[in-house]
Length: 143
Image 1: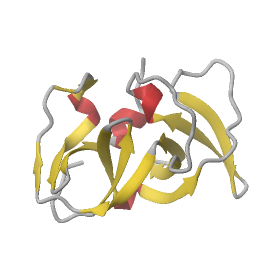
Image 2: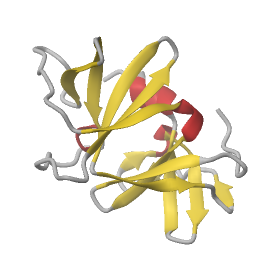
Image 3: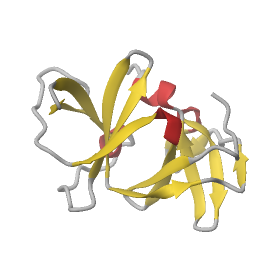
Image 4: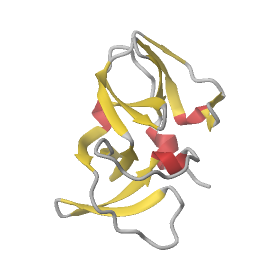
């Protein structure tokens, strides 16, 4: 997947950092709801939710990036994405806006302690730098 400055992205926050996902990859954004935990899953897989009769797994970007879990707030959201044949929820601290980037640079090898291969690129916007996530790497990660 190649980053394109003409595409729209949904910008969201995890901790103090801003990230984005291409808007075409997002099915919907929902408020936090009760998550049913599952045994013997990776630490960043928080469990599953029932989304209008469909059971979908939910991942925490906080845990994925090695950050300490925090209590959910009114701003916490689940970004539901379609990836390959699957629908997956991604927990984030807040969703900021739909945006485009004036410039997208290739990611460095490491971004704030997170491997650069998790990013398509780094978007430059009026608000600063935004890491554009590569869903293939995030959702298909093997430990």
